[in-house]
Length: 335
Image 1 (cartoon, helix red, strand yellow):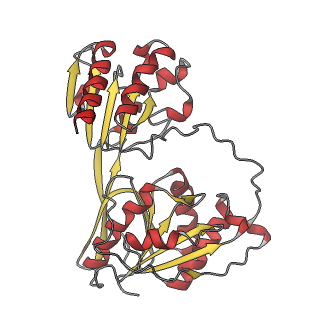
Image 2: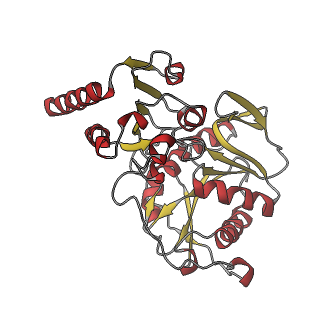
């Protein structure tokens, strides 16, 4: 279907990943540029078990057609069955473009599906547009130091993974009637089930993950101890954000590896990133350079982190961070 866009919805236990909802803004842009009716060429697909309740949410964000693959084998993510299921949906709907979020799941799944379908693939994109009927995407290279503009082959399926927070998740105007979800039958063979999930161990508890938060407050080795990270948590809590850490802080045992931001940790693109006592090693900059606004607090005037910061404060974090926390709480109380 000319101009049709299929949005892959990443979900866990019925909760949609925020980055997947942001994809609808990109889908509306592409569908409009390709000549489809506003939102008319946008479909969404969700894989999992007992996921029928997602249809209403997806309709609010612009899905005119919702396809669900519901199977106990898809309750937990596994590469082979998920790839087989998504390929089945692609064969049924024949979209022009498939959009996925650049998450750990998306990084694993997108290339597998691209190989199976013979699709053109572009990953970690921050913008996309049609020019003379050909899809062009903008993606980062060399740890975010430059951007590349890539043209995708118009003669084949195009799969694009989009970096989180590159687009804003906005509900469609009005109160759209949820489309009746279409359940896609799935037959998995033995080759699609070579691994079995025995157990899922959650380490983060109820604390926000740095890859999903709009605000991230990160601390470095300058905090000197795990106990001192309390002031980072307090500021993050006041801002309703997540706590991150540099590799040096993680290696020192101040924070778990699940909070590490950087090339060897997690890549984050929040609306606001506050770096406290982080000098800015190239590996760390690669993991947070795409943040919308970057605030750095450091006593070293020549720290590399100031080179990528929107705002910089030359100050002792043990003085500055509590002051910020107090001011944020005061402003919230006055609203």
